[in-house]
Length: 248
Image (cartoon, rainbow, N blue to C red; front, side, top):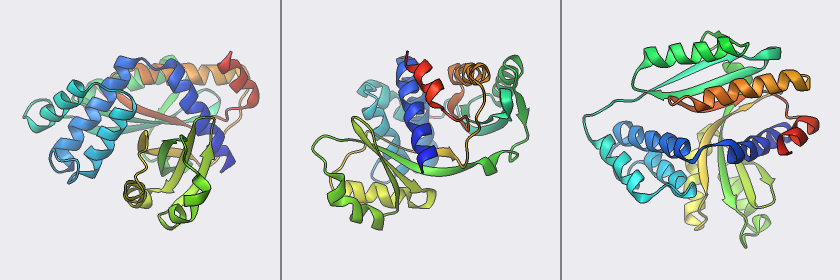
């Protein structure tokens, strides 16, 4: 899992440095709204998707009134978001998978296609790159006084595949089908994840030269800046050299 470990760590660090707070709030609010509309009502205990979305909102310090408005919007008959995905390649043949929530699919398709074109990428057919990624459950947990070794066996019984240790967090990985089981186990153990979500983790990564890597990252940043884009996943190898440049 070392490739995934490095990829997810750098992705999180970069996201923390680059993301605009209002954009983060907007993305999480959309997820809350669609969770209410499609996930079975406004009760977090009865709607696992909503529970995760609210948990992630709290982890990102989203104000309570923003959360409440998003729930109310989901209960109403206003704008309806739909989920759509795009697959394409960036400079150097790097695979890029884009997840969107949109109330205007025509606009979203046009915007995403334009970004790929402007930044030297190519938008492909859905399904063309799905094999490059596995959907995994990713839980980010603050270290605090938690001794992960003491509970590791219990977590393995609940689907634990990998534990990554960073300076301040433990990052737990599960298979897609074990996401709910791990959520339930952490709740039973009174361990609150700062973030719990499904991510598309690359099976292998692609190494390109620094110049090409920066072109890929600019493409990804433009996609992430689009209001309809929720998540962008890629298989770019975050080499030590590239990591060093990003942290300077």
